[in-house]
Image 1 (cartoon, rainbow, N blue to C red):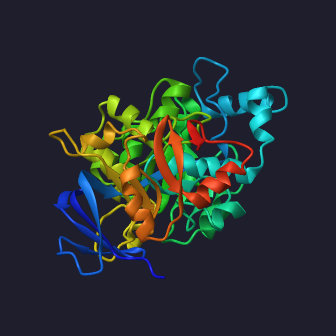
Image 2 (image 1 turned 90 degrees about the horizontal axis):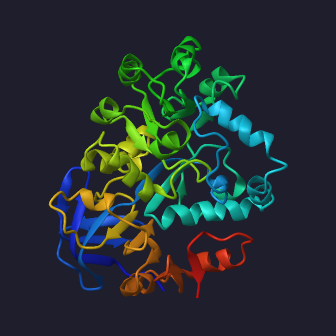
Image 3 (image 1 turned 45 degrees about the vertical axis):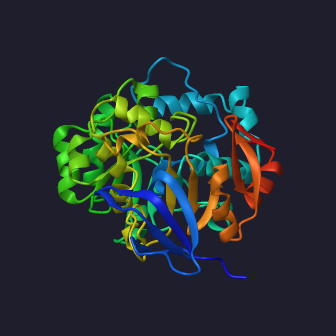
Length: 394
């Protein structure tokens, strides 16, 4: 039996450009109409004045590292290499490292999925090899068309990695992740190697100078900003206003080893820094993130007819600035998260969405709030050796 068309009504459709409508139809994986009248066989979904937004894009995560606690061994560092060396020196002695490292990779990656989709993320960019569980049957979209190097100090052959990356795919590298002289010279080193092009995407960029940020913009590249991780390690973060104005900024949560709990917490932290407006931050997890990661052709980060039906439903807003609601959001408040027209998690009154799409569901507690989650995902979590914090299967 085929799934019904879904007709979301009594809602505000919010994109990076502002409100674009009050109703939406989905058929299969795609958005088929905005503000058209309902059709005879549509399943009507009352959003109860909620705000429907594009599924969020988390531009930087290490999906296998989200079962670790936030760790550091000095009050502050001046470069990420110091922190990495501190971590590696304790791989076999610190229980906070030995225990999660012993967990099966597939189970750790599943926690990475729950971390993301429970916070409204429908697409994530993983900065590590695309392990098999990420390529087949992963609950959310994982960016697959990209090249990457870890960093200047952990990759001996950046030029080959860059040259192997297709020109229309992003090439991503941790760069200037620190506040010392070493971090300040990395941008020029990258340029001298000939790998600073229009598809070069830097992660962190704490040590970039204003001139370097402008050069990055002029070359057509972009930056993925992880301010929570930066402040945890260095007590400061990158200056990103010019990049946001150029549409060349995306936001990433990083892993829980150094970053915030999830992308919603990252948005809140970024907002408190007062660098960007609520609309800028909205763009950094939707349309600008899609631009930086070269995802725009699929309609990701947008709500558009013909685009992928990756959506998140927020509750009704009380804010005069319509974009501020996302910065006040917690995962317990999210009403619905769906990928390719299929619901992953929702509030109890979103049960009709699961029924209409033939998605079996099961009840769970998320931070003590009852939700319904795809039964397939709940079964996978029950069989996992490690659990997502705050999630209890009922």
